Structures are given as C-alpha cells and as structure tokens.
Image 1: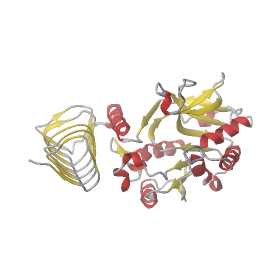
Image 2: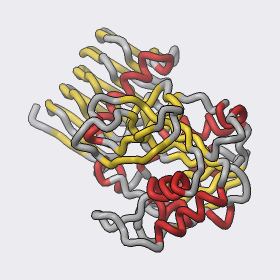
Image 3: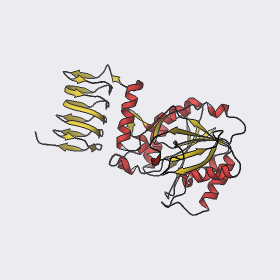
Image 4: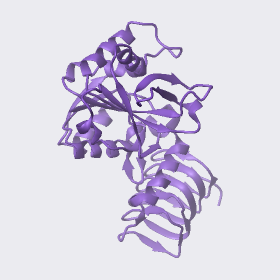
Length: 333
C-alpha cells in the first residue's frame, strides 16, 4: 500500500506563520501536524508516499527527508491550485496498488487496520465523523448498509451529519483515477476547482461500494482557533508535562501545559493549554491557550489564544496575537 498526501496549499488562514513555515509543519503539542500522520503510516508499514507539493516545497521536502529517511518520497509539484481532484491526478504515475489519501489538516485517530480487513465487495473506505455543525462540511449521505450514496457540500438541511474529513483508503485505484480524469473533463465547481469527492461519486455511479468508517478522533489544525484547541486536547492526552530539564521559578503552572527542555519560566502564570518549546524564556508572564515556539523571549506579557513564533522577542503587551518567527514586539513598560 502507498499513500498520497497533498501539501501544496498556502495555508492562508494561518498567516503570517505560513509565510515561512508550511502549514503541515506548524506544531501542536510540540510536534508538526504532518508528523502525526507520517508516524501512523510508518507504524502501518507504508514506505512509499507521493507528496503533492507547492508552497514552500523545498522546506517541506528537506524536513521530510531529514525526519523520515525510511520513507521513499515522490515530490510532485502542483503548479496550478485547481482543487483536490487536480492534486490527486498528479499522483497517478506513482500509484499502482491500493492507496491511502490523507489531507494534512488535522490530527487523526482512526483504525487503519480496516485497510487490512476490508471486505472484498468494497472499493474504498471513507472515514467520517458525526458533527452537529454539518453546514460547515461536505457530508456523506449513506445507504442503509453504510455505503456512500452521495456527498453534499455544506448542506442547508440536515441530510447527513457525517462530515467528510479528508482521509480515504482506495482499493480500486484504477477506478479512482478514471473518476479523477472524468471529473477534470467537466466544468469546475463554483470556486473554479475540481473536487475529489466528484471522483468518488463517479465510482459510486459505476457501481462501486465505498463504505464509511467512524473516526475515534479528529482535531482540526487548519486555522488558528482550532489549532489552539487541538494543542489543548493533545496536552490533556499524553503530550503535556514539564520537562525535567526545564527551569520553573516562582511561577504558577495550571495544567495542562507542555514546557520543554531548556525553557526558563520565572514568575507569572502559565496555563492552561500552553505549549512552550525548547529554550524559550518567559519572565513574569501570564499565558493561557497559547503555542510558543523555540528560543523565544517573553517578558511581562499577558497573552491568551495566541501563537508566538520561534526566536521572537515579545515584551510588555497584552491580548491575543499571532507573532511569527524572529519578530520583535515591544509595548510600553
């Protein structure tokens, strides 16, 4: 089994951080979102991955090759951002067996074992999560046996609450790419893009059975507020703690937090839901619901719901902010 991971997006909702860091490499609980996905693939035994790259592609490739040398990567440039179907079409020359397609916008907890036990009658698995705010998603309308009937984008009526989360296992890869080619031969959607879900609809219309499967966990990291929520969730579920090589002097720590090695905290209150990466100094600060990158300097700040990049120097400010790497923000003493 191979995998295809589209990574070409610019991550506009996470600017300014994504001006210099690819969105999938932004960290939650001290770990890039893409690393959660690749760790699952390695554990599953996947050794060959097609990465569809674009924005900051050299940065992306260098990180993958350095961190996951056991993965054979094919890096395919998506020059035109023409949608998810256009992205997957670029992977066709490299896919000659069943394939996982994973969009790197979230931290996922799913049973990948389904790929090994799927009944012979099924051509694919679409993982889906039941949500209440179904109007925000493409939702999967199913038949009585749990197979896909259609996918409806952002419905105004509750035709289904099964949100399409961007994780798929395709056994019939030939029919998938037939559907992708068919989709690209038609008019694009209202946004000018071609959607992979239309290729799934083609598969269904040809008689293929695409079965839905539940998601144990799905934590979005595609925009600042959900990235911070995901960070908090992960801190509560095994990624939190104060490293023994961190220094905490006279500060109140409100769990959950993640304070990494080499961090110095003097006074103030840290937490809840705060990650401070290695080497940062926080001097008399109040932080909650924040992610702070490595080697930053924070002095007398009161921040909530904030992202502070590595090597930033932030002093005497209050509120909520997004401060990118190497920034300098000084308020009045």
